[in-house]
Length: 448
Ligand SMILES: *Cc1c(COP(=O)(O)O)cnc(C)c1O
Image (cartoon, rainbow, N blue to C red; front, side, top):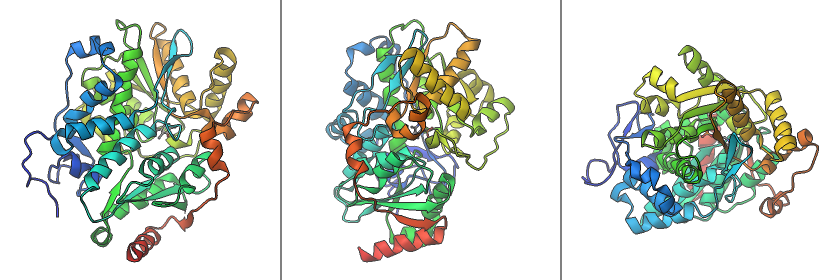
C-alpha cells in the first residue's frame, strides 16, 4: 500500500513520474520506490532557485553548509534537519579538490572517497537516507542494482552493514575491471553479487523487470540504487557547487565536461545550473556509445545495444537519465543545444590523451576522465578562450589494466585497494535471464 497523499505534508517536495500516470510522492517514497509504478522516473515538482548572493558569497560557506542548502528543499520534512545534517556530513567526508592541469583545463577529482569513484557521493547519501527511513520498519528492504562498473562498488560500500538493508548487485561477467569486481564480491554479509553472462544493458533490463514483477514485489520489499534513484541523483549536485567555490575567475564561469554513461551525473550538473549555478557550457563526453551526441546533431533519439569500450562505466546504449534532461529543458531542443554539447571519443583518442596529458602535464587521467578531457579539448579548439574543468570520475588505479600499458609504468595501488585484491571472491554466475534472477530472489526471501 502506498503512503502518498495520506500524510498531507506542508513542507515536503513532491515528485511526479515522467510517465505522468502515477501518483505524486514525497522524497521518502520516491527513494524507496526508485521507479514510479508506471515505470517513469521521478522528477521534482519544482526546482530550487538560489539567489545571486549565494553564488557571489559562496566562499563564506563551508562544504557542509553548501550541501545542506542545496539538498534540503528536495527533502522537506521527511528527514528532520539534524538528521539530514548528519547524513550530509557523512556523505562528503572526503576532499573534492579542483586541480589545475594546465591554463585551460582543471580536473575536479571526485575519486577520493572509499571506492575511489564519484558514485561514492550518491551511494553514501542514498544509503544513509534509506537507513534512516528503515529505522522503525520491521521489514527488510532489498536493494537491487545493476552496475557497469563503479556503481556496484560504491553501493556495496555505502550499504555495507546498514541494518535492515540487503543488497543484490548484478554485473556483466568479464566486462568490469579486476579492481571493480573485487569491490563487489569481497564484502559479503548483507552484500550479494550476481555475475551475469551478458552486457550491462542485460543486467539493467533484468533489474527493471524485477521492479515490474507483481509477485516478486509482493514477496519482497524491493528498491533500486541505480542512478535513476532521486536519492543518488540529487546529491550529485554538491560537487558542482564545491567546484564553483574553488573556481578563481568568478567573472568567467567554467565550461564543464562530464564523462557520461547513464547521464545521471551531468543531469545533476544541469539541475544545479538551472538553479542558478554559473556555468558557461556543458559537455556530455561519451565513448563509442553515442546516442546522445547523435541526438544533439540530428534530433533523433535511437537507443542502441551497448558497445564495450575501455571506459566501461560509460558503456550504456540507452541512458536512463536522459529523459530527465529533456524534462529540465521542457523538451525545448534549441534551449538544450544552447547549454549542452556532446562528443563521442574513440578508445584510440582516449589512450592518446592519457599518454599526452601524462607526458606533457604530468597528470594521470583514468579512461573516463580522459574521454572528458578529449571532448573539452575539442570544444576549446572551437572556443579557444573558454576555460573549463573535467569531472575526473575515477582514480586511474581502478583501470590500471588500461592505463599502465599506455604510460608504460605502474600505477601505485593505494592501501585501500591493495587489501581487497587478496580477498576471496564470492559471487553467483547467472545467465542473463530474468526468471533465474526471480528464482534466486524468491529463494533468498524464503530462507530469511
Ligand atoms: C558511472 C560512471 C560514469 C558515468 O556516469 P553517469 O552518471 O552514468 O553518466 C563515468 N565515469 C565513471 C568512472 C563511472 O563510474
